[in-house]
Image (cartoon, rainbow over all chains, first blue to last red; front, side):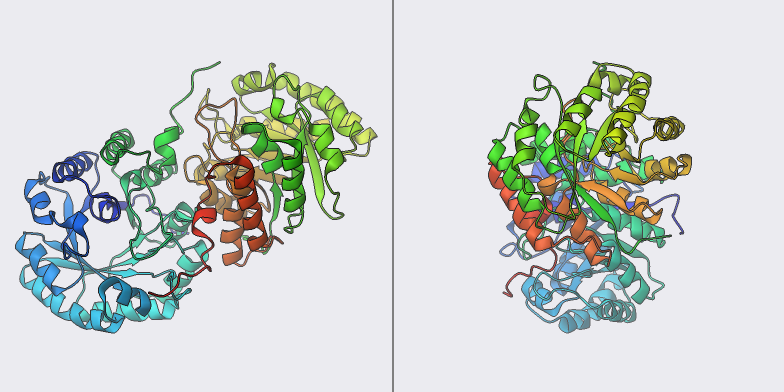
Length: 301
Length: 301
C-alpha cells in the first residue's frame, strides 16, 4: 500500500465529455471551461483538433480556445488524432497535446482508420513536431483494459505500446478505460506488466460501476493522476453501449473523505456540474449531483 | 490484504428493494423471488413484517412467503422492526429474522419511533423468542457509516451497538450504509473499531458511486458477506435523496472478473434484472443491465 496524500485530476468534460454529447454552443463551452478553471482543478482538457466532418462537436476548437480565460497555474491541453491535428493544436498555441492510440488494433482502425502500429509510427513525427514547439505530448492508450470488439487486451501488449511511446519520445502516458471494461483485477494486471519512468495517468469510465474501485486500486499502487468529467459528461462514439466518464465530483468527494487532497473545491465543482446540466438541458448521470455530498444533511424529522 | 476467494451475497431486492418502490402485485413478487432462487444466490431477504399502514408495499408478506418455492440450500430471511413483527415472521415459519437498529438515535426515532437504546433493549426479548423457535437473529445496524440527519457516526458508537447486540444474543450483525454515506475511509474506520466474533455483513448503497470501492475495501479487510439488490432496486424511505442499493449484477460482475467466486450465474442474474425492470415498468439504475457485462462484445465494424 502506497496510498498517496494527494492526487492530480484532469478535467475532461469540455473535450471528451462534449465530444460525445449533442452539439453545444461555443459560448457555453467557454463558460464551462472558465467555470472549471475556478474550482481548483490543475488540468483541463479543453478541445480536440479533429476533422469537423468526423466530430462536428469540436468544429469550433480554435474559437473556443481563443475565447477562454487563461488562468496561470492551470495546465490546459488539447487532443489530436494525428499529425495534422497536432499541427493545428500547436498553431493555436497549446503547449500540451494528447494523441490517442488504441491497444486494440480493431478499435484503432474504427477510431482513426489505421493500425495501432501505423499510429505509433506517426507518433515519432508528432513528438518531434511538438518538441520543436516546446510542447509536451501525452500518449493516451485507449482500450487499455479491454476492447469492445476484441475483448480482453493482453497487458503485455499495452506494456509494449508504452515502450514504443517512450521510444518515440512521448512525455507522458495515459491508460484509457474506453468502454468501462476495467476492474480492479485489470488495473493490477496492467500495472504489473507496465514498466516505465514516464508519468502515468488513468482514465476510468463508470459504465459498469467499477470506476472508483479501479481508481482506489490504482492509487494504492502509486498512480496519482486521473481523468474525470464533471457531471459524468460523455462516453465513446465508436464503442456502442458505453456511457459515462466517472464524474469529477464523485472522485473528489470520495478522495476528500479519505483525506486524499485534490486541490478542488467540491462545492464549487458541484455548481459547475449544475451548470453542465443546465447547458445539456437534461439530468446528468451524477449521483452526487442528485444526492449532494455526504456532508449535506437532511433536516431532522 | 486478506482478499477472500469467495464471498456470499444476500439478495435484498424482494424486501429492501420493493419496500422502497411503488407497490407491486403479489404474483410479481413471488415470480421475482423464485427467479432469484435459480441464479445460484445463497441467501434471499424475502419480505418484512411491518405494519401495513407504515409500509403498504409489504402488506402481503404472509401470502408472498406462502407462495414462493422453497429451494433447499437457499437461506430465506425476513425483516421485522420489532417484537410483534418477529412474532409474525416466526409464525410464518421463518428460521432467520433480521431486526434493524440505527446507530443514529435520530434515524432510529424516524424509522421506528423510539431511541436506539430502546430498540436494543427489546432486542434481548426478540432473540429469546427467536431462539425458542430455533430461528437465528441478525442485528442490522442502520446508518453505520453516517446518518442523513446527524452526519458522521462515531465508529465507537457502532462498535458499542455490536457489543450490545452480542450481549443480547444476536447471531449475526450487519452494517447498513443506509443513505450511501460510506467511503473506503469510513469502512476502514468502522472495521478498526468493531471487535466481534459474530459473522459480519455489509450493505452498501451506490448513491454517491462508492459502493464497489467500499466493498473492495471491506473484502480486503476480510469481510465476506454483502447485501445487494438485483437491478439496483430500492432506497430508503426515511432518508430523502437516497437512491440505490448496489446492484447485485454489478457486484457479481466485478468479483468474478477478479476471480472471487459468488456461486451466482451472472447471465441468469441479468435475466432476473430484466424481469425486475419489466415488473417495475421503468428503466432501472443498473449500468450493467444497460451496457451488458464486459465479456459481451460488440460486432466489429
